Amino acid sequence: MIRRAPEAALLLLLAAGAAHAAPAVENDYPTSARVDYVIGCMAANGQSREAMTRCACSVDTLASILPYDRYVAAETILSMRQGVGQAASIFRNTPQYDDVIADLRRAQAEAEVQCFK
Image (cartoon, rainbow, N blue to C red):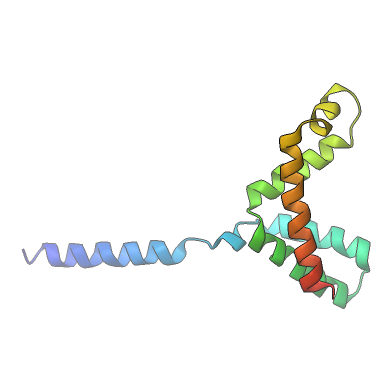
């Protein structure tokens, strides 16, 4: 019995550490994706410190609303819709893709309200 007490304590510590180490949903965007977003945002809003701060706020807000895999899906659909031919047509004419884009647009609108007032 005495042997099991330290093992149980170790398991509890490991479980607590694993729960603590689990990333929050708003932190599932990789740094490179956040940087790409901020660079693009600054290109559209100015190359100033204020624009950088607002753009960083925007991607943080977006990440708190939309999981990264959903963001990637929406960006991919938007990119594919800009193409020509049958493949692009499929992405433009599939209603379920409209829902993915709508989720991204709603998250972007919320980020606009919170960060660019």
